[in-house]
Length: 328
Image 1 (cartoon, rainbow, N blue to C red):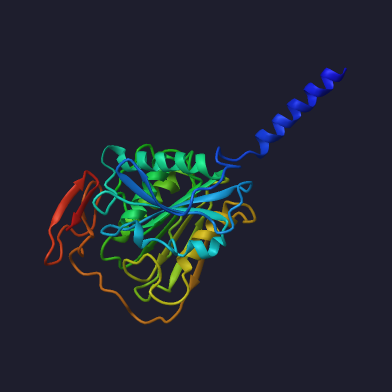
Image 2 (image 1 turned 135 degrees about the horizontal axis):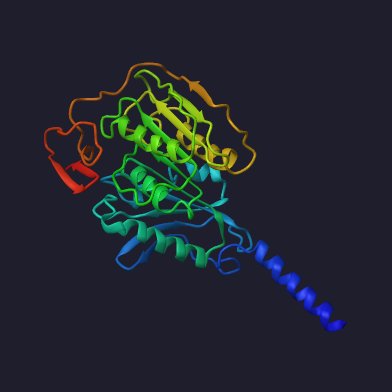
């Protein structure tokens, strides 16, 4: 009788531990924040200031833009760190040649290595991994939506295009796209194409999304689509050019991303109507210039590209991979 009771409680304790356990790093002393190395590649790790090894944290990847590097993403991490309030671990990886060409899936594999290392050393909520980025970094986030939808809970793609490939891409994942209607680097058609993939994959109702006329990037229209339960798609078109955050006023891009990840798909959100649009207007004065050729660091070609194929004076269009040619 005693042995039976002991066995019962041992099994119960093991079951409870399985239910509440986070990643392998839970309970361990945390590594310090700072630059980390994996082989010949680097990333910046930001551990919450009040880190508790018994608490499971969100893990958020933030990818830099083309021509940038990991050091330009902290300390704000696209404005998300302030909103997280020390409830998330942040990672800013460094791309090859200041970009995310993802040749032979090398960048996706690098992300896999970072995920494994962080989860093994820190307490991560394995159901709360997210990715975002601007421009080339947005394209890398989209690539992860395609190739790692069972690892990442959702992505937020800011002014991105299919520039880092899309291996797979037929598995549902909550998707947020943000793009400027007069984007002179990554034409808005590139962002619409990414959105449309997940409208199809996520089984969303077909609706025409309203978009604002040219103006300040503080003006935007958000369309929330009715999709398969648990797999919403939001599309936010703003009136400005190629920006990773508003040029003035509150950082609504960060707020909308955080709301999508925490309220819409993280509990507490409500199912949207078939199509809901929200318009916010601040300082409605014209801005931006779409131009006729892509700016330096902008896209100028690649499979599926429908934007400009010429570059501004001082740069030339150079192929990076089958999906992406860049003005360099």
